[in-house]
Image 1: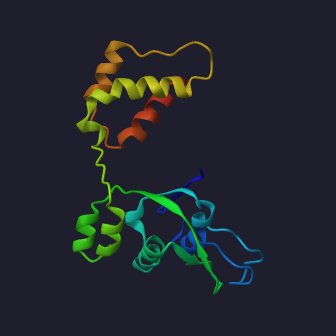
Image 2: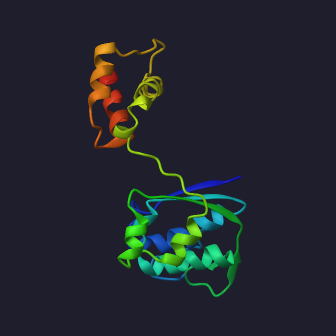
Length: 179
């Protein structure tokens, strides 16, 4: 099954709609060929919408329609495209607060929140640091010699607050390997 990941925060707002739904040739200046959108690529598979809390309200409405009707339109097309996919969504913002502020659609929030998993920050689960460190040592070691970390260094890692979360830990481990 296809697995299509979309980082909603990394794609400029004015391009996100065409990335998600695709574009017909001639839909706008520079659209010289038909381009499939991420939902079409995810047909019969999964689409992961990372940082979904950053979506504009107008795109939230279009996304809600896709989730409810299982169809959408490419930009510049009047032909509906039927699709079948499972949505996984992630965010680092509190969507309940955004709903209360009118910055995130309540109906979309409830449509997405079928199963909710909350993963605490790394500083709240230091017992994961040794396993993650071992994984990153293995992942970023280029030579055949296994890399290890001293107990004193591990103690420093365990006592650090990790404001950058798991990504920061990975970068630190990668830097240690390089140095």
